[in-house]
Image (cartoon, rainbow, N blue to C red; front, top):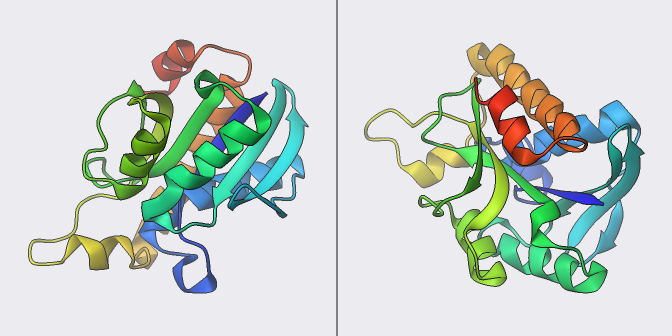
Length: 186
């Protein structure tokens, strides 16, 4: 079973913010395959289903971004799943909006959700899809920026990024992550 963790913050207040692009991608993947992400377990909302590539668990931590690792660890321990089967989907300031970057290891790069996952798993080696949200204009605080919504003019790029992330996730179910990176890092 592959398990896909989308990062974001719970609650309507954060629903459409840049920091929640990981949740948005999971919601689209769930919509595509008729999976309900509603089961409350392991400090997260979980939805399970079978996609053409195999069984999958979609996980949205409900711990708030900075504590995402708690939900990841709880899921790992409860289901006894290997870290190699996890893919984390999250927002990335260093990638422009509309683009995604797939990696299998690396530092947190200042992302507190990833920092928490590294802390709770004890490794920087796990599969990830970094969804671009671009950097804020000079003088705009990063914390305010990631908790702000997308501009109307960014809507097509946001949709493109979400679709591409879902395509990559679907592809990864019956291909290695290296093959997925080769295909979708274009």
